[in-house]
Image 1 (cartoon, rainbow, N blue to C red):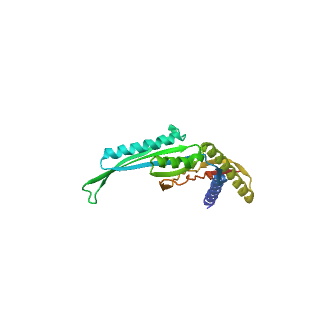
Image 2: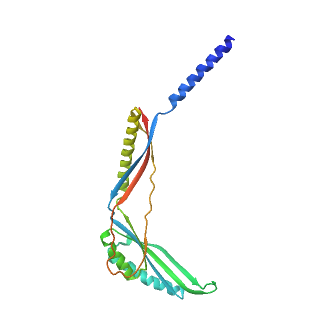
Image 3: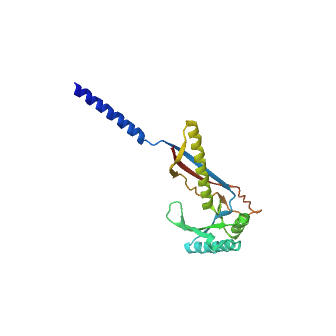
Length: 227
């Protein structure tokens, strides 16, 4: 009987010791999310200009398309858009058939080019000139700042400051002292530019383009220790 009591006491002591060790091993932390937002006026505008032509022969359609697109590209260059800021986006040649699909009626050729300007003040004039040169599709603008990397870094700094402020508030409310940073995870994702499409037509007045402001946002998840 004495042996059983001693064994039970020993097991109890071991269980208490294990529980204490487990509690000691559990980290005491505060995890928060931080957001940093930087507002800036964009200084770049990107457009997609397209030319679509139709002819009974495939080669004729492509040739007519090339003539008009070359005029568009030449005009864009004359307005100060550098070759590095011009990029062909897509070229297509599509046969148009009758309702039954048994015969080809004509061929539709399409060519689109992306153009970026560093002078948003010229954006309206660029649209007007491209349409006058033969573009019959205009998509854009995508308004962005040229120093996006620097803005992203500033937003990350602001996100870290926001996370620390949140953690300090929680620590004060809980009656504990905030410790050092344990882990940091970046949650940000790149938002692709949004283009709006409009049908091209001869403008009666200069096309207005207002830059407004754009946001650069970065989000972090930060875990702080409890001192």
